[in-house]
Image (tube, rainbow, N blue to C red; front, top):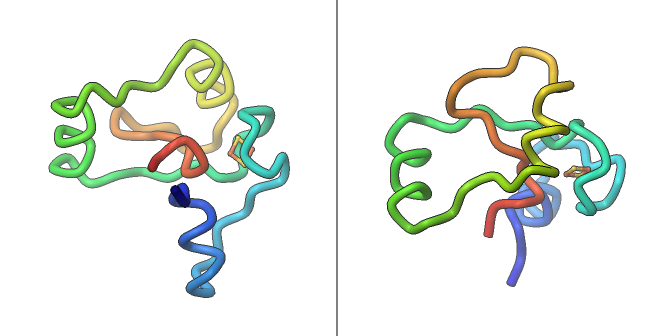
Length: 72
Ligand code: FES
């Protein structure tokens, strides 16, 4: 399936993905709504350690931050 990064790019929504989705950058950082974030958690979709490490370097980190390329 397509991740959120690919979806955004296909629909001309500006979201960068410098590493092309291999969790080696934080340019695809997105801040989710509480509802969407909670839904992902309910689905068991949590950021893994690598994603957390990259998120720590993201500008404007929020509790509901994720990397767009890691969302499916
Ligand atoms: Fe690099 Fe998502 S595009 S971590």
